[in-house]
Image (cartoon, rainbow, N blue to C red; front, side, top):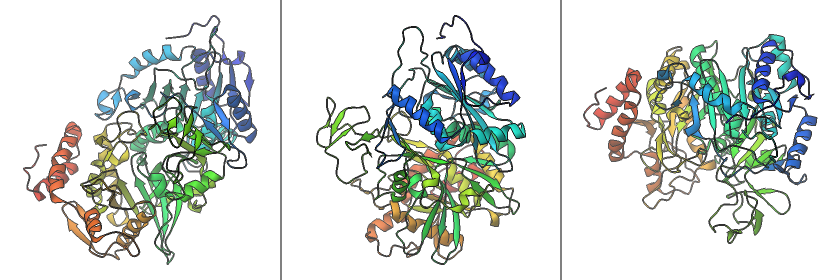
Amino acid sequence: MSTAIDVRRTRVDLPTTGTPPTHPRLLAWLDEVVDLCQPDAIHYCDGSEDEWSALVAELEAKGTIIRLNADLKPNSILARTDPDDVARVEDQTFICSKDERNAGPTNNWMDPDQMRRIMTPLFDGAMAGRTMYVIPFCMGHLDAPDPKFGVEVTDSAYVALSMKIMTRMGAEVMARMEERDADFVPALHSVGMPLTGSMTDVPWPCNETKYIVHFTDDRVIWSYGSGYGGNSLLGKKCYALRIASVMARDEGWLAKHMLILKLISPEGREYHIAAAFPSACGKTNLAMLEPTIPGWRVETLGDDIAWLRFGADGRLYATNPETGFFGVAPGTSYATNPNAMRTIEGGNSIFTNVALTPDGDVWWEGMTAEKPEQVVDWKGRQWRGVGGPVGGRPDEKAAHPNSRFCTPIEQCPILSDDYHRPEGVPLDAIIFGGRRENTIPLVTQSRDWQHGVFMGATCSSETTAAASGAVGVLRRDPMAMLPFIGYHVADYVQHWINMGRRSDASALPKIFYVNWFRRDADGRFMWPGFGENSRVLKWVAERVDGKVDAVETPIGYVPAPGGLDVDGLDISDEDLAGVVGYTETEWRDEVPRIGRWFDTFGWRLPREMVDELRALETAFGRAPSRM
């Protein structure tokens, strides 16, 4: 419902802090936003440390954040959200293209005009009693040939602080936009809780009604009702994936839910690898890997998003458009991801929905082998290692399963110098992966680019707490992009195929599929994972160089006996054979599931994917699908 406003104010009527922009199209849009949302004040963000300090003080006074112990986590804060605002709301995330067919079967679609009719009354007066923060930002390097600009307008200081960490944000970006008279993606966000009449604020304002909307034809983002990161940091999933995927389709590149790392052999040979996993399936851990194999090293370039473009040499180059890590906290420890922990120890971070220790530090499940005797949990309750929260169930976690750390990437001790290259790094390999307890081997190499696209298009995973809804349900997640493709999934797969045709096959990265999560009949993980995944990366690198043999199977190439380096690894021959091999009976069950998944694509399903499926059906003695 709209909020009644007695006298509508314009931008020039409002008290202002910061330096107003001179960009004509931006000013025109800001006039429209102020007229609609009716904030009480405007702050133009410059990204400075003084601004950070002022916003932190503001949020502390409201009870939204707690300052952490400066000796333990310098310049860092803890935020606790509303218990109903803790994850991406995929059921309320919409692609609003003019033609419904362009949204496809994997997206929620609504006609753009209809959506505006719904959301305009929600935004009407939505910022009353609040400050409107204007955040100019750039996804990718400012000195890239084609920097991608955006401006987020929000009534959340938490969002402004987070955007400082996650993007290139502030005065320098605004100056470059004005210098170039650059186009930008307008991104409007409100927590949806105006302060009118006798209403008092709450520490974490939000609204039961939530919409995360992408007007893909116009390159516009509207987000209402949620303050949680993936719903409110509009440069991240909304821009860098959903809107950028449409830009990439039209401009001939790829926007991907991928980490980027550099693998360095003992001889100094460098391999650049991009890997796509669904959220909470190990991207951050792999991006910051500490190899267990002597002499091998990993350097980090990014843990979540990659933009892929062809270079003049015909190779596919990857850049990370972000400047921070927005990592899942639970399970992160010095045992699982020591480089993430070292990054966090540098401070300058925002922790959300983790536990607070008595000495002003943070804790979450999996951080330490032993539970602490007492902390304050993510809901603000006293919580004990034995007994759980006071007044709650004994099994309740101290930190929310999707609690996060938001930390500057520059603090990563193994950050690669290549991160600063505007043109990106040439990819030697692309890895797809998911969380499957059976069927998918530890590592498989595709026969060629087309087969690799098939692997990515049929990628599947058991759901995690990163999105609202049931956990542990198996769903297809093409290229780990199911929640983030801004257009028809079949056209997205076709775009991958078309990209492969733009270069010689010898210049394209090799494609692999991994699964760290296979279990035995007793439910035990058969592969140790974490640092030991470097053994898989070594095999990938050796396959890129043609130095190690593989066994050809109907599903691709798997390691030949003795091909995977397991020297010093405590794994039985039975477990090794179980994780590296494939089980034909499991794949006989898998093939029809893939067919049913492809049925959802409709007539747009690329012919190349039909050919790959039929080859599998023939290999396993099934009648070919009629497509």
